[in-house]
Length: 135
Image (cartoon, rainbow, N blue to C red):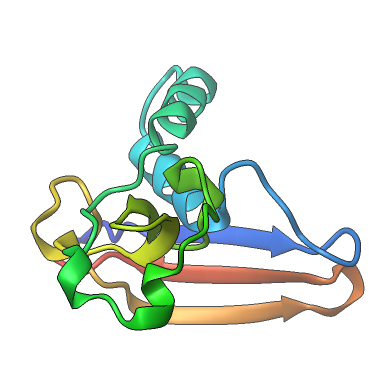
């Protein structure tokens, strides 16, 4: 009896000096994985992308931040302005990007990838990332 193994694939390409997207690659991959088996895949990914503007997890307590992390500046307006899994967090003096806390308790996040493979497509300046989700 054959066992089906789910494999997720993300292809990232650099088209200029800087690769920029409205929704960063991590969250785009999450939407792609969540909508993979849907018949309305394009609509699902579009709606998922809008939801991803608020990233999972929470902001760390202000009293745990280092002095430089509590800078009196506004470096972001919403979570999507911050790289990776960082969130836009309000603290005593400003608003800055901080590493999210509580991600291990956040529902709907995939497990840590297993069997990770990264392949370089030399002529297209692209990378293909392939993995199987952990159980």
